[in-house]
Length: 594
Ligand code: BGC
Ligand code: BGC
Image 1: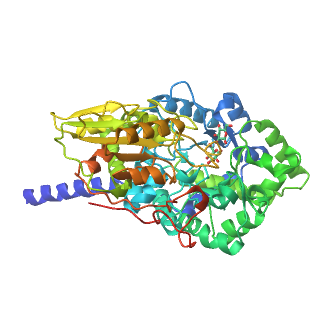
Image 2: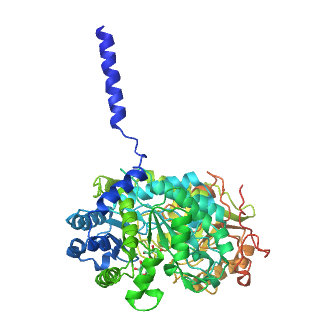
Image 3: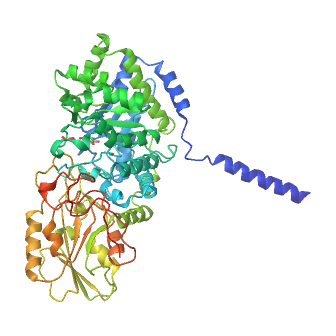
């Protein structure tokens, strides 16, 4: 009997334990979130509502104004950051912002937004994953979801609760400087991977998740000549076929926010486009979350600043990334409501959506950062996933018996400054807005990755200018692009940089065989380089974990990546895309193995 009783007690303990461990992926239901939002909305004044619709940049944050105006959101745009940008420093900063929001009458938490596009990329020493273009080459939704969960963890550990990601653009012109922010020119790959990222970012809001943001709605990848913030001349039918599916998938997977695009459709700026924002996205697609405007984008709508606010809000923008002159924005919107140029109904709809997102994202329950989490940012476990992603993203375009390399060769020479440059590997949106060369954060560069991979008798030599090739068993040249981001990365010509051109000349003059590792945010028509090399491997913008490159090139893993974009033979073929009848150097979907 005693035995039976103790067995019973044991079972009870197990059952109790199982109950107390709530399944973390159970986010609160939409029904409950909206119910709470409605209850709160009913208590709010117009000023409080307009405060919620205001997002300001941290570079102009005045802490007491957060309380005074009941600001709904703060972002740290491109280059805005506090003095300490390690996870702990960011978290302390964001918590301080939050504490000011919680001092308001209704204690509505702020939602802190940031461009965590490939990891928590504004946190020093966080793990940096390959940019989307590389993940497009992997075409592995399970992996993308796993990456997004880590991105959410490291972002949230830094105090951020909202990533302006995934960019689900379908870039159709390589001249566009944001090509790498897209997964692929293939809309079905983009839709699947974008949805996977949404699921990963928004998983387990109680402990890990952060709100995602599908962007930039809609047509950003289809502008004429690939000009950033430009004009898309496609018909509605084409826009729906090419660009809408990624948003449909994101919405189906519960994406909480969508960012409007700076670009236009046939001359009409998206931020003022009620048809696409309200009729299509909110009504037809049944998007429940809120629409955020892009950085200072209302300004581009034309007219006085008050008129731009009227146009944007009436088109369907719910929260405005003001981002600087928030007092004028608040005055403008208040007057517009008083003058009945913006209806109270529109304001209520916007704020209801914002509060719904804040409830869903768990901000009311846990508004502050988790101090212990900061310690795990950039952990070996997280880096291992990034290394796996690098392996999967490599695309081998050519290989005349050059790879895989043996680990016991006597001497391998790696040429070019990009071979030893974390900054180039990471590309734009890494610490700084435009990214930069140099040791921007902790990580493993290609030279170090090679050293990690070889036997102890192998010499790995780094040669910046391509000299000192004598006695080398293998020569590998690292070429590519220098970091850039939106609009500064737009190009009319896509070629090697002058320094890479010199390097390539030096190597050619040596008359020796060589392979190329190519770091870039898009396909570049370097046809001569490809034809002169024995092997050519596109590694895109792999991020901090170059060991993943060595894993493949030394044969521990087979290459599996496939081109997410058509690779053009020459500049005059751009734009070039799957199915347009043009002759490519390599088709979208191409990629060798061994
Ligand atoms: C970009 C967005 C970004 C925002 C905030 C804008 O310039 O277009 O993609 O999320 O800035 O930094
Ligand atoms: C960027 C911002 C950046 C600003 C600088 C925007 O387009 O996305 O985040 O700080 O430009 O002008």
